[in-house]
Image: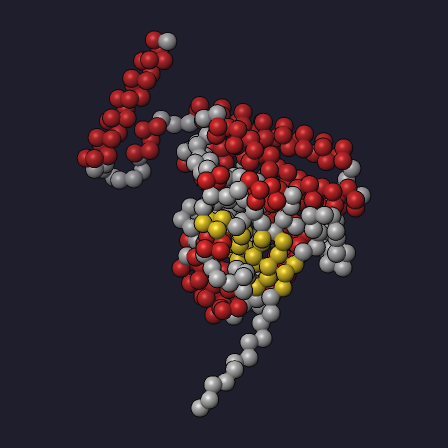
Length: 368
C-alpha cells in the first residue's frame, strides 16, 4: 500500500492582550471589575516587594537560599486568580506570589527559608500542596488529585505550576498522557522563563513552542505572553472552565523571564548576558499593568503608590513577627525526634556532637 497522509487538525494559538508598549486588544480584554483588577495588582506588587526583601534578608544572612520570582508575577497571578478555594493548587518552588494569594502567610515563608519545619505546614482545610523541589514531580501529584475529583464527581480542578525544565522530565510526559487519556480536570501551567538553571530552552527541545507538546497527548495547548496578566488570566479561565465542565486538561505555556538568579546560590552572569536581561526587563509585567490601570481610570499613580506603601508595611510586620517567633521555636536537637522510635547509632552520635557544639557556643556567648 502507498504511503498516505494522516490529517492532523490541531492548531496552536498565541495570546497577548496588553503588550509591553501599552497596546490593548479591547476585544480580548477580560471583563474584570475594578476591585478584581486592584486585587491582581496588589498581589503582584506584594509578590515582587516581598521577593526583594527576601533577597536582602538572604544577603544579610538572615534566611537561607531561596528562589526569586521577580519577573514571573503575571504568569502566577493571572492563572491562580481563576481558582476557587475548593480547587487544588499545586506549586513547584517559584510560586511565592500565588502561594500568598492562596493564603500562605509571609511569616511562614520566612520560617521555611530559615529551615524551620513550622514554615512548611499547610493549614487544615486548604487545598494547597507544599512546594516541590524535585523538578516535575508535582505534575503527577496534580494529575492524581484531578483524577480523584473526576472519580468523586466533584467540580474541583487541579492547577499545577512548573518551569520549562520540567518538560524535559518523564514525570511531565507521564502526567500529561494520563490526564488526557482519562480526561481529568487539570490545568498545566508552564512558566517558560527561558532557563532551567543554566540550560536554555533551545537545549531542551527542538519544537518552537512547549505548548504544542499538548497536541501529542490529545489535549488543547496555548502559548501566552506570560508577562501579560490579562492574557494569562483569559487563557487560565478558559482552561479552568473546560476542565470543570468535563472537557479535560489544558497545557498553558506562559512565555516569561526570570529576571534574577535561579536561586541565591546561583550566578546567572556565568551563562546569560546583561543585554538579554535588559531586553526582558523592558517587558516587566508590573509597570505594564500599572500603566493599564491608570489609563483605564481604575487607579491613580498616587493610589498605586499608597498601595505599595501598605504592602511594604505588611512585609516589615511579617519580618519582625517571623524573627520573633524564630527566637521562641524549639531546640535544634528536635530535628532528631519523630524519625525513629529508637535513634540508630550514627544519628545518636550526630545528636551528641551537635549538643556539644550548641553548649560550647552558649558558653562563648555567656563569656562575651
